[in-house]
Length: 158
Image (cartoon, rainbow, N blue to C red; front, side, top):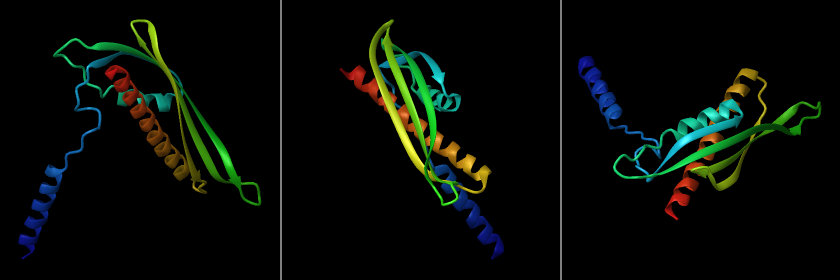
């Protein structure tokens, strides 16, 4: 009985692992443009996440494609939203702003500004607070990069 139960658990685990097929949104599709050069200024942790997501765009080798250069400047700001009676912070707001410029062969095509915000509670455990802030930064940065990719797609469709 115990051996049968163990075999059943192993089979269920194998099926669940094999059937899971996570794929990033923008990685599978082939676009009729490519990003030649990406230059960054500002917040390194935000820029790394944006760069990772922009690198997911696969180059289309079947036909001639438009080439774009992107220049991105990011800022990160942490504000105290509310305080308790002692003056200690209760809630924070994290604001990430990205200004990006899309160039086509040294000609400026589009300049856009994206601002994403998130409000979160303070935590007495500073390690946990820092961990939560990293997760928030990652989520906001991914949303910003998705908006950038969508704007390039829209630009290229016109």
